Amino acid sequence: MPVRLAAARVVHIMVKSYKSVEQSQVVISQLMLPSNTNFSGKIHGGYILSLLDQVAFACASKHSGHYCVTASVDTVDFLSPVEVGELVTLKASINYVGNTSMVVGIRVEAENIQNGTTKHCNSSYFTMVAKSEAGKSVRVPGLTLKSSLDLHRFVKSISRIKHKKERNAYAEITCVDVPEVIEQLKGYNVQIDL
Image (cartoon, rainbow, N blue to C red; front, side):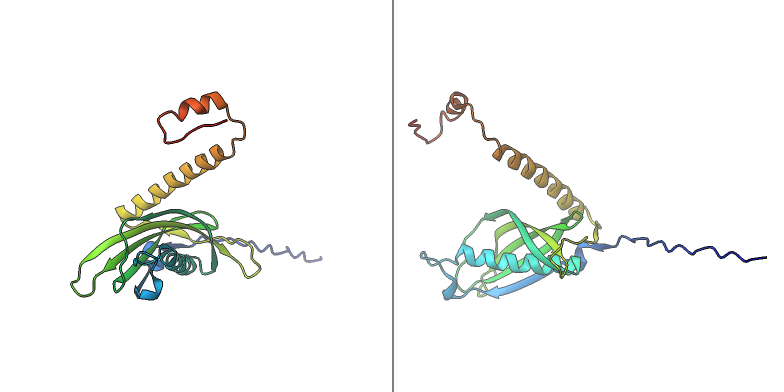
């Protein structure tokens, strides 16, 4: 009697991994030098943006385990100027993850190293996308929320993403009712000369 062998089926089960916010946090500090100033003698905002992009990359790459690119800079709020000689510290953490993207929240503080006073100078949100070596978007680990602050940041990110989508949809409107728009602009510092 012939023996029948059942073909073995190999099933690949993708186990979703998760990382906590703490596992991907990045903190960098840098002394602000005169070479980074603008025409008014303060540290140039563009220089701060460059530092923000670097720390966002490091945080997102640490979380995803892949090379990451900046997809968008959703918010950059310059709250206080940074002075020459201050020690600037950038604190980055993953606030939200999608399938291939992550929102990195960054807080920038400047410390007067002579008297120890610290001020909050900037808050920013960068959307980063993980890429393979071939340049294709790749899945990122999920996010484990361990505190009410983690939960708060995740929910706020969802809200920002929703508002961003609404803004983008509004920006794509091509037909404008001119009389209606003119009426809406009353009270603004604008002169309409059509």
